[in-house]
Length: 172
Image (cartoon, rainbow, N blue to C red; front, side, top):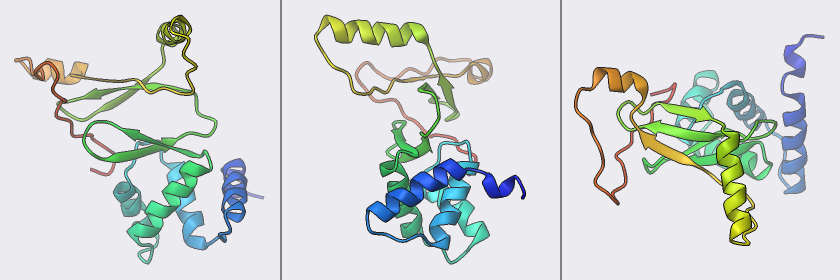
């Protein structure tokens, strides 16, 4: 048998179990959306994913993609993230290590990173205040090294203001 047949087998089983538990059925459109989402290592909006899915099957509507992303999130296969541009992005969650994000306010690049020092500091603060953290998300906005090389003047948001963000994806 080909390797492709077994690609994402675990994730597909988790998804099937979840949709069956919620009283839904497996469909070819849901399978396609799952396959394309899992094959893409990008942060995607529902619109981004719809563009990719539509290339393979023009009959799949945006609402179907949106609802399937919600199911993937409920099943623990996807995670919603927000980068400050009033859009919801989805990233892989199942079998992916925890990470945080740096977002360039100039070009929209999203950099994923992990820091054991930051993780330890967060745990220490939770202990200090008797707080039981169930999850966290760290997002930092600024200017990436590439944009710093091309931009001469500093662009900083006024203190207390939300930074202006336009996230760059593989689709846009």
